Every structure is written in C-alpha cells, then in structure tokens.
Length: 305
Image (cartoon, rainbow, N blue to C red):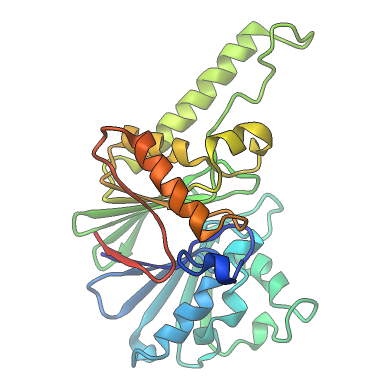
C-alpha cells in the first residue's frame, strides 16, 4: 500500500509563507493499492481539490474505475473540499462515499446535500454529473472486495467519528482523526457535594476500557495516522473536550499498540513550519529509547507500507 498526504491541517486551511513545508490544506489522504481499477480517498478536506487535479492527469479509465471516499465524520474541515473535487462533475465517474451516521438521524447523503445546496454553493447535489452512491456505516467489519478488508471503530469526538483500519495483503493502515482520550465524565473531586465514589470508579473503568479497546484496534498496524493537534500542555490547559489529542498521547498510544510507524497529523492551523520542526525534535526526545518510527505528516509526501 502507498499512502499520499494531500492535506494534513486541522480546523481550517492556512495557506501562506509560514506553512509551506508542511502544507496548509485540511485532511485528505490517498490510499493506492496494486489494484489499478480502484482509487481510495480518506476524508475530503481542502486537500482533495489538488488530489482531484492530480487524478485528472493520470489517464484514468473512469468508466471502469471505482472511486471510494471514506469520511471520518462530517465536520467542515473534513468535507469542505468535496464541491471542488473535479471527478464529481464527470458523467463517466462512479463514486461511493462512506461515512458515519449522525446524531440527528440524517443520512450521509442528506448531510452532504446541505453543503451542496444553493444556500452555500452554486451547484446542487442533484446537479452533479457523476454517479454517486452514499453509504451510512457504523462500527463493524467489511469485505470491500479485491482482498481489501475494512474495520471501523468509533473515536472520541463531539460528533460521531470513525477510525478506519484497512487490511490488504498483510499490510495494515489505521487512521484516527479526530479523537482525544476517553476520560471519566463523572465527578472525580471527593470534595464536591455531587461526588459518588462508586460512580467515580465506574467512570474510570469505562474510560480505561474504551482507550484499551482503541489500542487493540490499532494493534500491530504498519502505519497509524493519529490526530496530534496539541501539545500536552495545550491540551491540559483549556482543550480537554474539544475532540483532539496531544502529540504525547499519540506517541504513548502507538507504543502501547505496537505499531511500526506513527504519522502525527491534523496540525493546528496556528502552527508554523518552524514550530512543527521544533515539535518534531521535542517529540523525538519524548519517545526516548523506544524504536517507534514517527514523523509529522507533510502535504505532498508519500509513504510505502
């Protein structure tokens, strides 16, 4: 498998001279298999526009090519590039779009149709020329054909969000964006009048089991791409509950999960290239003697796994 990063930022695109090396586009990955008749995309942030431009130069036989887009969730930074993805305007293109159901019980097609409406965009969903099928998916295991097996797991985010585990010919790619550690949501302060010791223990147990379950989901992956928007200091001082992780937590999770490589992903839009360079040095020291290979994802780079 070959993974190409077309967008690595979180929250909002941030083009400019301070983000040239790592890139300013929001999340989009391309997963290439040896199967020439299949294109796999993970998330449709602003990076998908450049991916679409690239696909248009590859002499792809669109009538016989299946294009699959897997959305982690429908927050704006993960779908904002879809209206600018050239293949959705090709009458000969066939797309399947997968994503989690929502709390509002609206289908994926309805959620994306809100964006592709005259209120927000000059082309409506029903006016797209390509053939698009929409699939609402939950936690589970799926045979995607051609030797590709997919597993999904809910992450910890303010909206339903899926982590993906792609297994193909003995290789494994896992994605975890957007997410943060599961935590005890009940009162944990013994001095609080609402404190209940039993509920405290049960909350701790539930959070621990949820985090361990995710680590099992990532177990032995060849590459784990993990939300690392914050430093631990930033996360602990005002970012808890925002749905994103600290770099240190990503490293700890990868080590416990025994993954081979970790890509730190979903960079904060305020982070400059120089700051990410420094964070790379800091996190390398944090990793200490562990032999985990890790790197901060850069737009436009590819990795074979």
